[in-house]
Image (cartoon, rainbow over all chains, first blue to last red; front, side, top):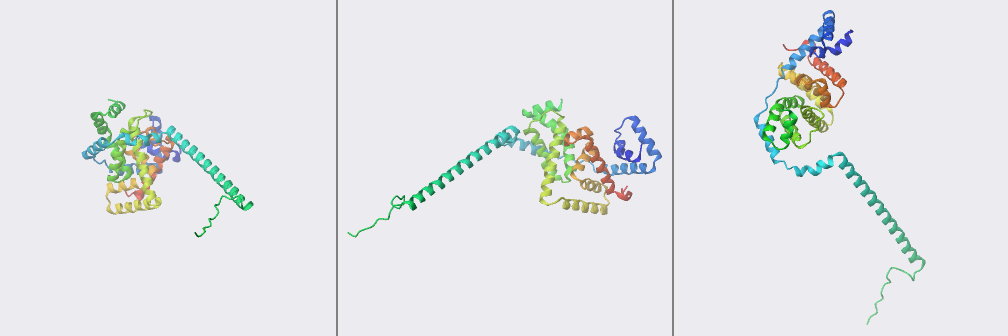
Length: 144
Length: 176
């Protein structure tokens, strides 16, 4: 085995992840190669330091706070959000919104067009024939 | 009693089953979160949220319950890291902070602090793998399930994490 290959396996060797024949092969290489042996020692020392970072205790108060949080939880409040988060309802919901936007947008577009044509018709009426007009003619007041 | 049975009882409102599950996983889970975040108060929040989600979400028994719990905790940690990164605009600030902390710890020559800062100086994805493998003693297979990545990626991340940690103690400065 080459040094490069061995160095990739050193962590697993230290954790004793390999089966016996592999462990033996790595051990033999380490006994022959001072560089790999030094690297192995360094990793072991690093792990020793990392082991100093011990566990912290979990205070009992955390359990009581969690119990309180669970007790206060009202599932119906989240139900709609949870349902929407599921893939199928979410897609259906998105599809409905898209369809609504399309229908709404198209209908608005048609309406605008109608107004445009209507206004053109009215103006053409006014300018074409002044006698037929939709604009009310001003009333002339006569003094009594 | 199996975890899955406890979980079913727990979902039905059995307080004792909940207590049993809590007793079983609270210490390892809290320590995992604490080593991931390096912040005690934040760890409390994420720890609460993990158990809370366990109760409010539905467990699909594809993997072990513990794997699922670690997965929830990891995702919450990542979410928090992303939030912090967004707040700080980029990751460089975090790295600099960690590097500064590491320098301060070197000056203090406090081994526990040094170990703590060395872990927090790792990139998030490497820290998750290292913490799960080294401190939680999880197998590569389980880590790959927790993090949803291939086993090969877990091994390479572990390798890089160890190399980065070695660099933190460059020059044989192990303080021992």
